[in-house]
Length: 273
Image 1: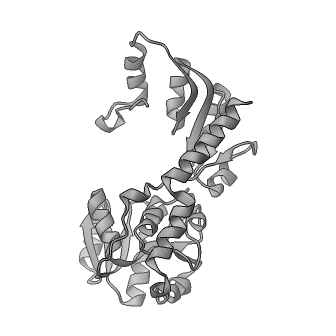
Image 2: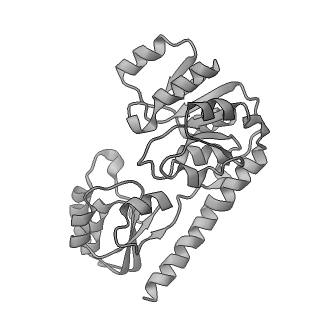
Image 3: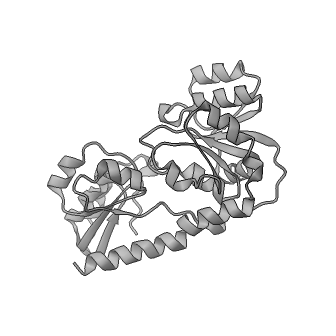
């Protein structure tokens, strides 16, 4: 596993130049990368097969496919449907390490929780605000927000904005919330927040968009909403969902153990080709 230090601001192409200076030529059965920009490592790593996992919509894939030869996987059927032009790709979902998301018996002292980059229109914070206002419930908002949004929050008595949060705080917030709302627009590929909420036993009110209907099983770990009436109606039904069922439904489909086996099966299949 090559840890590309993008967190310190180093661009992959810069790290690639550092990587080239090492003496040993790496060889492997599978070179697995998680963004098209890392395919450049295939130029100096001798691999029998190359796998690229798509975690989002990449508009320039036609040029990438001309330059490199690789197999493609997608983190949802939805993402595959809009990107797999040759219909030869594979779907392997994002994994959730269930052990890291314990089912806590917490008092539900938050009505509704929104987590995400508030500045991104695809996350549809505006819908979450409208839902909370119509329901007359308190909405906790966590994530990055610009000054215009901060000014808007200050005028809304039903909103508690807590800014960007770490993993521990996120799990605590999710566990203490009656529901997490994910009203995302396409091209939301998977929605990790929805999966994480279910992992701790908290139901999700999700839009019928992108990969969300693949994560949220309607009536089991949350509800799929098509309009405002659905959000308002299903919020009143979240108490009918059992936390253990919510968690089990998620784990059975997305636990890291299952996804690991899915990738291993895929790798074996590709190596036989």
